Image 1 (cartoon, helix red, strand yellow):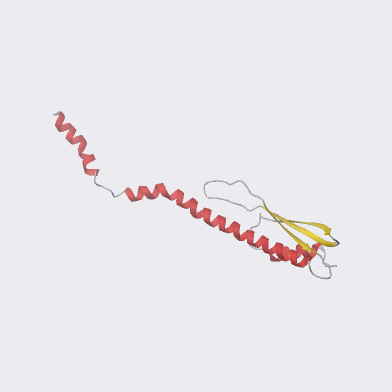
Image 2 (cartoon, one colour):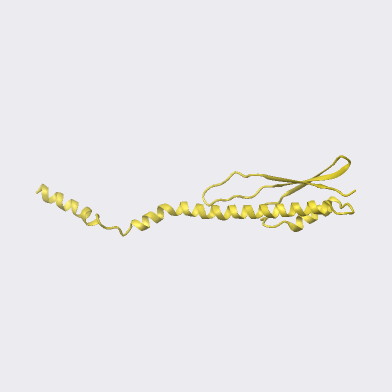
Length: 141
């Protein structure tokens, strides 16, 4: 009697032993969050690098305007920077600062831009990173 009951109790386990119909769905459910974070992370970092390229392009244009003759005011450099910057979203406004100086009688301007990109991953938050770039442009006499 006990043997018969143990055989009946083990019958569902024997029937399901070779059944693999749900294995793929279970594996997919376990790996989906990891893949989603990788894909969203890839797109987020691509957008950050695209914004970085735009900020550097604007910084180079501001430095180019600083070297033109006759000497241009800071407002022209700021306008050139704003016109040539690309790849930023609304809350990522770079801050541009100017510092004048002279070396061996040659005037220059140091142009510094500070940029804090937004890095949003799907399931986690990332602490903001501030990127700072600087160019020195020698002014015409």
